[in-house]
Image (cartoon, rainbow, N blue to C red):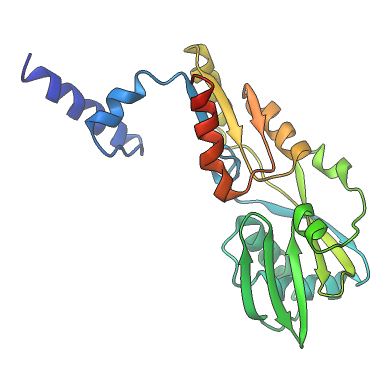
Length: 229
């Protein structure tokens, strides 16, 4: 018995490692047996994390100008949607000037200065914070697409670029397997409510919690624990 328990832990951790699952130690493996709820992020976890641009929606700027500003803003961003915009713009050989004084706005978007003008790009929450009025693009969210909005420091809406991410091939089966074990599966994301609900329904999760900033996600997990999970 003294030998078999450590061997059981090492076997479990080693077997998980072969599947690409890393555990910090045997105590975490032991705690996992008592878990009744699993919380997943959306982008890059349940989805591929490799979105593609599907629509360009001009506002105060035309399509070419909008893409140029977007490329300047997103060039230094690490977000998957930023990379999708860069790939789309470069494919169409859109000329742009690298933005200066780049700033990441966690859970909202990015900001940079181009040609002496401060620009902002990101989600609807960022636009509300900046006092920018944007059109209703709920129809895209209902299709699982995410619109990224662009504006200048004066509050002028410049346009939107819509991108879509897709589920990983095995996400639906993984969620179904967990639910088959009687576990609760939650998707926790910073994305807008409608897009999140669409992706959540595709994956088959029990509950979707959307529009949560990265700094607030740990608090949501603690709340779930407080609810008895």
